[in-house]
Length: 133
Image (tube, rainbow, N blue to C red; front, side):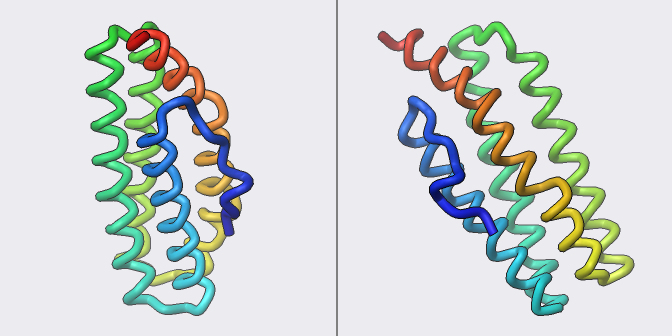
């Protein structure tokens, strides 16, 4: 589970809200998979993909509007993550393996999110803040 204190705060409050929402979805996914609830796990995976897609699209629009210098690398990481999540959903739809979802959460998803916010999103938010000053 991601605890709020682990989540880095960035310079843009609305981004912090979005990151908190996403961490709560990851926790919801972990709870569903941990209790072997196939239906809830699949629904939460799909909810997480939809939320993440919107989240990334909003960030990418802001990056383009402000001519963020690291746009290409940041967008590439977004695209990679969304593709990975889509593949996990497809795998789960076929196999219904909640243990695989738990392994994905613990082995990748939680640490990826915390690291992405701490590094790429922190720099991006600081750039946005300075661009709007």
